[in-house]
Length: 93
Image (cartoon, rainbow, N blue to C red; front, side, top):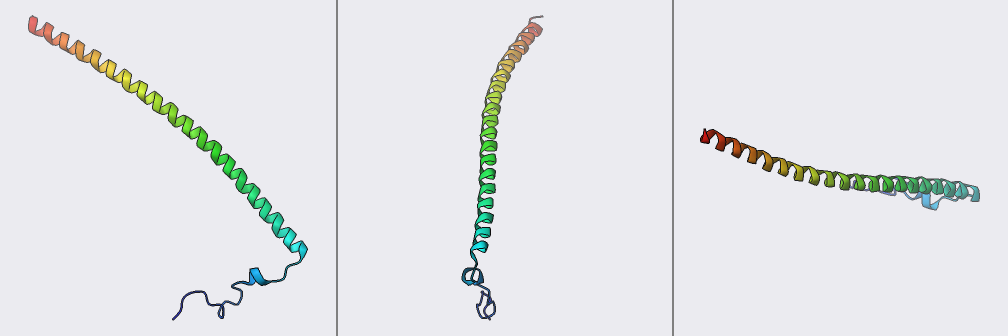
């Protein structure tokens, strides 16, 4: 049994390519396609802007993370120093 598209069973398989169209139908189709292309171009522009914005936000957050990690390391070093001094005071008493 053949499950593919069979022109004998589906006579309109290429109907869209072979039917006779009037100039006004072609104009309507072209207008419709132009509107679709214009809509797609707007979507592309919006997505490009969103992409640029998200990349800038990602860069900003990466910089903020690097700064926070640096501060974290400084605080850790400071706290480690304080703990060491406290331990030396305890043993010195």
